[in-house]
Length: 317
Ligand code: SF4
Image (cartoon, rainbow, N blue to C red; front, top):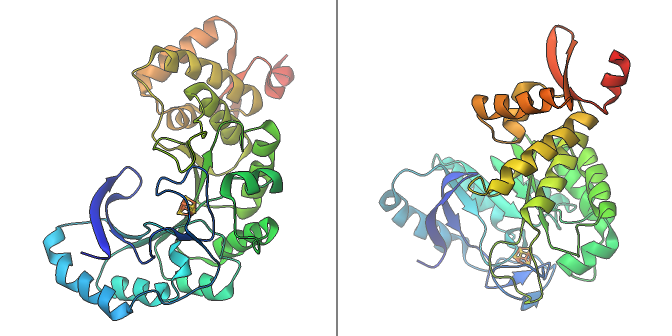
């Protein structure tokens, strides 16, 4: 098969059948962490790379052999929105009764034609690795015509108009886009974009550039806690925490304290944010109550957990 791949089991999408509609490493970016390798055709020119009828034919001939799938995902070895037939192909797949998802770097969403092409999809996952020009250039190494402000505006305007769900993805590379300044700028940009949720992760496959390093669990946990506390949208850690590791439990305790010192949380919030069971959370909170690091606070008939350094705690004094 030339265009279809998978189905691939995915934590986010269930069972997803991929469609690759872009020639190998044709992209608007040349990301340092790209798992497909270095970009060989750095371009912003949208083209019809293949005969769309050939892609449709391959889909029809193979879809029954694939079995039950949850999504058909446009992704692959380059930036799928560079293919100007993507809108037609999304509509075709939807008309066959399948849910569609597009994995995009979001760089062309400022173009009306790209916005319109993706409107019929069910889920769009754009990436935004930095909201600061300096780190954006370092991590994504974009085509010289691309401007970060326009890209953020494009993702924001698309999200506003789109009827499906936008899950924004951020990938962190150690020492490149993970400074406090970077995280704060990202939080501001995401606050404007207002996606359905944010998925954050770090490098976990061999990158295009050898020097690229991943963040540690602790560093990811700190970013996760900060973003969860400062954003009104759900933040999801791709790959989850390494719960086999004892350090995970120490880190969760520390992160709960950080979070409840910034923002009052219900028990349900804490269970969801830190993927804890009822018993796991009770155990953690029991210790924090005992040490005087957490307190109960009632507001509007609801019980919240607050930290000993939160503003709520001062009010209670
Ligand atoms: S946008 Fe995606 S395909 Fe393009 S270089 Fe970056 S990671 Fe690779």
